[in-house]
Image 1 (cartoon, helix red, strand yellow):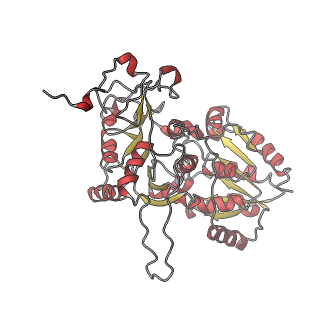
Image 2 (spheres, helix red, strand yellow):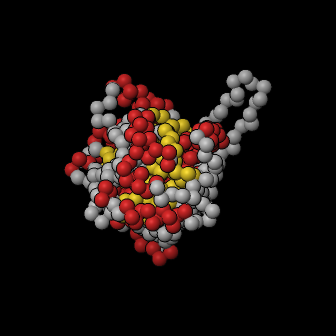
Length: 455
């Protein structure tokens, strides 16, 4: 019987010898010794729902790919056709389907990302550093937002967001038509990554799964309500409490750690600070509004946090005791002498009471959106407020600020390193904001008036 000539050189390696020998038939796999492995195995427990028979990553295996290392590159775009009345046909970034889809999977690149946001204006504003982190980690990525109608207004201050759609994720019983329509919208956009800040149970995790994204990551309930959610998600974040907003400024730190994690030839991405962008239209609108009241740019102080039942108060869900009655604000306003105080009211029904108590000592402006409030703060000399979105906007625009909190703990959580950020914190000693030391607030306002900004 004739022997096949190509079988003479066949050799069978033992497990010991195979660890130090590169496979001749698999050019993309190599098994170097464990001492030279550039990777370290994460100590985080793997989700058992994904594959109960998966023993985990092999610490001795290094994946060598034909694609370049480091961060992803932005895809080339086709030139615009100015003679076309419909603009030009914008092809998707991965237009070479056969190669791009494989590269995206192997390298973990993200071309389209969607963020499902829970909460109001305050929670959405604190998500801005996460959006910038995604933009830095995945160059050229398109970021879309799904948020509540109030939270959607925040993204007129963010230039990194492509589309923002209103949809209330916190509604436990949504309309079936709206629910299925939003699933269709998410499926039709072909996202590579979907992130969610809503605490997911089985229902919300199934909603994310039906979006047909490649990777899905979400916060989950820290109790038994999260049962079954890991079946639909690639990554889960377990917060310390059922109210994610109680984490304050660093409420999204677990998601930030996961997004900015280091990769092959990619170091850990640093967390950017909170920044907002204000458009020229917003600046012009707000400037016209306060100019009609006889106030000049840079010669007024913004006061925010008047007690009201309006949803436009822009409080945080992690600090519901963050509004002061107008009687206490009137005592503080009397101490402002170097600039004109402007009291921002969230609803027109508060105007009559504020005018009756404050009188001509201050100007009253009705503003309900975070964009207008940010433009007003940016043109001001400083801010005096409670723990509303105004304190974060003041810090984002580097404006001197006096912030009134119900307790020292809340102040440290929502405004960490206040001294470095040019923010004076006045905290109540009883744990209730209404018991705050008004005299301490008055002295802080006087010291604020001596800053070079006021001069």
